[in-house]
Length: 320
Image (cartoon, rainbow, N blue to C red):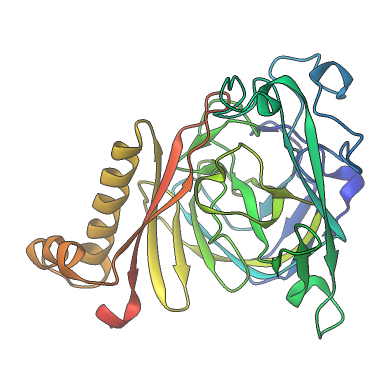
């Protein structure tokens, strides 16, 4: 099986000029080892998020949130659609979160000065589950609070059309730093293609995250992702889509949040009309009446140039 090793997974931009690290066929399973969002800087609570101490933070934008790639998919052309089928995500034995001055919505807090006057790094221990791996393992937030590891890929996409976009705050129809918890094992991620070969990138694995990633970081970790591609020829998408085994999710990144919610819902309606034989009227009414229609607010953190990310979700029960 082909693999991108962690030592080679330190790109910091979606750049169509990059030389491919792998060339794969549609349907071929391969693996990517990823760094955490700090490129390995955070290892214990003494590693504070002080910009002057962090490698790469003397650059503008900082060299943070590394990604691996690009992966060249044989037979892929501009205007095609790549479907990334995620087969497995295996995380390492710890994750971290870092807060402090000028980080997130409480980075200048006067109500809770400890959040804006000092840097804090929390390290979360991971323990394996019944399988002996982290696939069904446990994250230890503290001695008293634990939950199942629920890994996902935070940054994923193809190379944008013309621009070179950073992995730290780049977002678009092609993907980017979206921190969507549904980009996970068993789901299919639909990505538009702008260059021959697709030029696919991936990184920023999380062990878990709540809605919005409110502080700006979640349970950041290193990981190994196993996936394969399906190729759909000459199919246009307005933004990245997700197929779960039991639901469809249309996504959008925008500010304000209302625009992301409104546009994601419109994308979902278009999906139902163009591929599931709904009339526009029925699709429009379905998202207003179905008790299981959901709006997911995946990312809403005030960091760099990041837009807010929303997903409009409908169970397949109401479609098939």
